[in-house]
Image 1: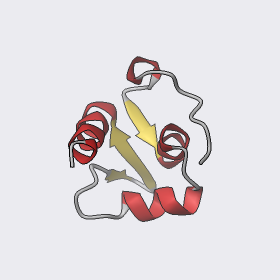
Image 2 (image 1 turned 180 degrees about the vertical axis):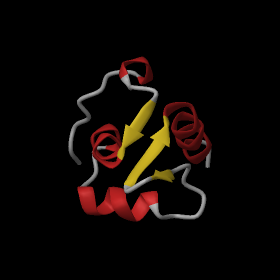
Image 3 (image 1 turned 90 degrees about the vertical axis):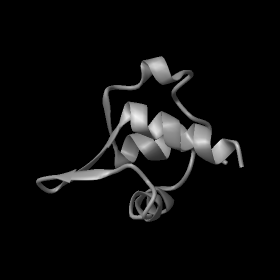
Length: 67
């Protein structure tokens, strides 16, 4: 598993891109794109970019870690 470059949620920008999701979760870029396209993952498309709101990402992580 790759090590995250972020130490806390406070360090993250308000909106994350796929590369940031990859870095936070310590996964490959391919895995990040697969995750982004899952039905329950909180991503949205703005033009050609895929972004993830930090607050919704955090809630998604907390929800998944409680299982």
